[in-house]
Length: 283
Length: 74
Image (cartoon, rainbow over all chains, first blue to last red; front, side, top):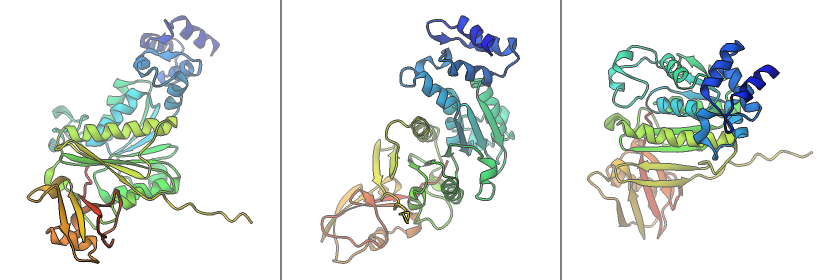
């Protein structure tokens, strides 16, 4: 490993490690791109591909992102952008879950879709795309429905779950699972010109409260559909939340929901009562 | 009593963004929802004075009630 570190350091220029050097190191020492990037970051070498992440993300934080595991539930409108942004940010392990294949009505907004990929499974397409975008990222593609029963199997080891689902009932199951598993959930939903984002931490019930009037079926997306830009906006807000949660920075949308209206260009914040703290009997 | 009623997203279509409403004492959120020709199933968020509210919440003079439709797509 000392040879690998020395080889990487030799090729570092102005504190930046070019991708060509990462690639050459992987080939020369028969290592995966993930292994090379880990060694580089552990030794304080900043991969040049992340240079515009500096200085909002320092090398130790870039390492933390690379050692993080994030599950994205849904690889459609929201999920496509979430996956792309997580991989470019440098999150090292990504789980992509979606049971569906690409269909023609996805083409107006789902960034992973294209005419040539109609009929292809969304999760597998996501893995192929991310391998091209950032070969150091390890993607686990799962072509299956997420539910409470398979949550622990599908989302094993995830530190954050990102809600990119299009069903309120599955969302409520994800919220319940995240509480059982003790992981934060970044929730996003869209419909037409409108969307909202919130982050729920273990023990909180924000998502359940958001949908407490829900009985069955879909929301306004049923009538309005979804255009190209609303998923991009809401997905980007979700990824900003993931980044902050993984790095322990800033103020996440905790006990509050941001509602976005792109028609009137208005944002509203709704506060939720903090979850009651369970008192532990000291005796 | 008087309240300020704010509607959001598709609830504004054919209605208004914001209006003062004169209501009988003891009116709850559900009665306001129904008076607008909306159903409970269409309601996403009830916000009462900036905080999460309930359909059963009783309104008081000077309250600001905001109603958002259900949004669930992805």
